[in-house]
Image 1 (cartoon, one colour):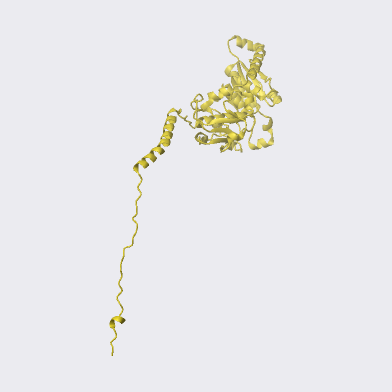
Image 2: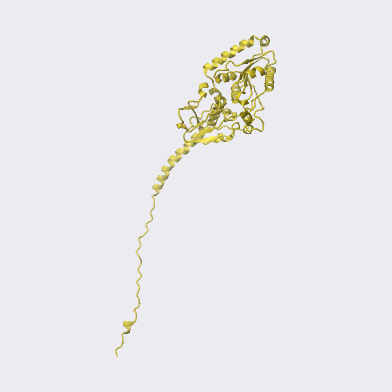
Length: 369
């Protein structure tokens, strides 16, 4: 019997050959140090130039004015920021002449404080009255594109945010901005710009000369003048008109009464003895009946420009030595330009009214008044 081959039926042991896989060597790319240095050098050139320019500008820039809560600040009207201005500021003009003057002066003062160039549209009425305005005229609104609109909190309350605007943006002011604080730091500059046209100033000077002649014919006035007492002209502005309409009364507007005017006139009669009161008003009949003086050496005359451009009356008020004002921005500016003693009507607006909530007397009336 044949034996089966055991070798043939027994399984063979598997033999495994372990081979190491061939993997390519990883190459680490290194940057040449000179390349990094060149890159940093090229980047540092514009950054360094920017830093140097900022340092030079910061060194040459006049120090910013300090604006306290109360009182009068230093007049920086003669400082020139024009070389620094890269962006513009403008304002939407609304209201009458007095409102426009507040809006222009405040825009100019805010621009001065922030290093912004003032722009106003060519059709603005101010240039018809004040030819020396320094704001740049614009023919259309293309200069106002991409402007950031700034709205004031209240029309007759100083908004301190206006002195920290983003000077790297064009600013468009919306509102009335009726506060002396917006432009007091540039008051001498504003006074130079609010000079009237030569023909208007000449007409007003001639009118005051005629008024002086009529006053000189006053018998008692001649006696006072002979004693060396100079004549004092007091501009009196009385605003009534539309303020008597029910809508304005409901808002809180008020008008001065005859008692206030009597007291104001008495003050100047006693203080200066020899006074001519020049009255500018929109209610001539009421003024003739209620504006009176008890002093034999004082004279009351109405403006000879009642039917002319309002710039004539404003110039007349500004040419006076002192002022009596009732309500309204027109009289405010007449007193501010006259720069003498000022008596104002303190019972404005009506207490607890809508207008009173937006009105700050210390922001509206200068502390000198």
